[in-house]
Image (cartoon, rainbow, N blue to C red):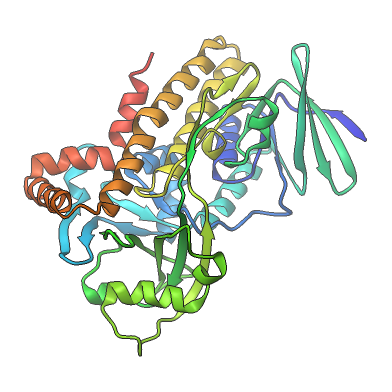
Length: 406
């Protein structure tokens, strides 16, 4: 077993949250080591929508310009119903006085992480170690001993602060014995990608389709460049086997329900996957010298695109707070404040809104469905009400509320 003294901060997970935390720390002059179980940067096709306040934060750390060059700026998004068609079309330009980025940006997560890695390594203050799976942590007075399994066997490092950015199954969270409160939805979600252009049917680059049988969410993603591809997220009934859900006929039927095509039409499929969906929040984001961020701290259904965005908000908030503590500019109360602000933002905003979005899309009562659609039409038609609605859906209010927590 190899053992050595590490930097003052160690981060587990080289996804966007871990790399952004390392970058923010490095920009404040704080060195860190990032360890990642995978042999390189991973590909995750689930997340890919960046909201206005997230783009503001990423601009603040010098990342947004490169993202904008690769992604699709989405000014309009739609609320639709499978039977009724277009219900409301939302114009994010109503937020132009609230943010310099009055649009969503669609960009695959795996196209963001290489940008982040390049910036992180260019600082000269971050050591990124791939192929090392975090195993456990042990308290040793004012230090932590972190062990990881690597190609040459077990490796241990001593550090002062450990950040868990290692996803929903976080081993850091488990090692710190932090409860992950919440539940798992009975249905799973399927993600499929097709080159069929839904814009030919009047769809904007982002649309949410309500339906009591099988709702769906559609996003146009840049892929490798024009013309890009369309990604669909939809629920899979608990009684449907994984093999059936991943079979071609299942995906073809899901697309035909939206396009209205008959069974003679076959659409090109680029990708399919299926995964379980959770609504959980760690009971605390800080336990002594261990801190959590991103999916390690909270997970939610993807409706609204809050998960990755909220994780980035965690990373930037935590990076600045921890830098102040390490440099002696503020005591550890800065980390307690991080815990209060980000934990509350996820419990009272992200979880509630993502659950509400799901329930609205899958509502089965025809009277309630009709009422909901009329409410959306009424709000969308009033610029003042529409702006208020967009302040919530764009996460601008989430940031404001979190910052108001002392």
